[in-house]
Length: 379
Image (cartoon, rainbow, N blue to C red; front, side, top):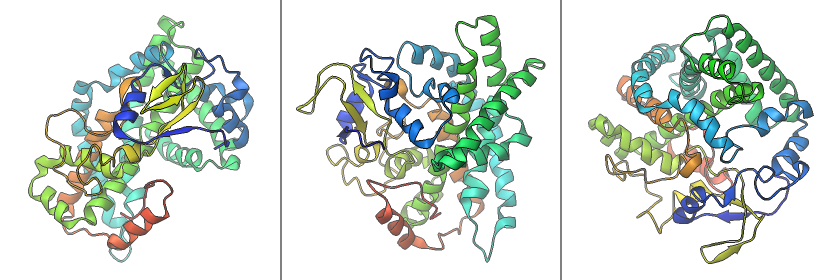
């Protein structure tokens, strides 16, 4: 975004290789590269967007931007909230929220058409992640608006929204200290109060900010894109309706075929590295293109074809939609569960659903995208 040069890595195997290679760092300032803070692309981007300087620490210290050992420490502190057992135990609540949204869906119809993005795809994951973290129900509409403001990258909106979010989280922490519960926010407070060296005030606020925003935006787009894909592929839709047990495999194929994340943030070579016969010099920036890796004909047969049976049941993940290696999506299990429940219940409740704009809208949205598919409102 700041015109600095970067290598694009587009093949499946090479993308996975870089994602698990410790010689590529997320943070050029904290790594062995020793870059000056003002030279960091993230800092330059914040300059471009007009972020207040005293608040930048809340973004620069995110788990998304850190490398080991800080990344390992921060991830360990929150990983207990995302264990397979806890996510499985959460499934009845996800189903309950989904049913409630589907009950109200007809109320939003205009001439038989409902926009699933604001009335279903967004409310489900924001409700789930806010309950998991401990954001009060009354505050959740505001979080949805804040999330939209942040991803807009519009300086006038960011300048107001970001300080408001930071102040709000600090206030939540102050209130929760007086009445700790079993949510993630309470767990972070206990960790901080028991041993402040493991989690600073800034890290605690940043963690809440990161989990809520990262925990709903991409999942909402997976549900929206996935619905659009199914409605424009009637053969695959019938396959899923005839065999709901196919849902876990279907979600993996949807993550591959129309996943919401197209590329990773920049990574930096901490030493000279040869990649696919190309020498990446120490300090060079590398951009990993997930959408092309997920359509690599070297790895997939007929990659442009949506095939819900493509991924064998019970096998290792055969796509990079959730990343790979140490920075593999912390909430992947939750996102997959939400998508399974959302798509399964939506199709069961409204089996005759179709896209009012059908395939032409999906193809038009694809043609407008630069470098791959973007989050789409076709559904």
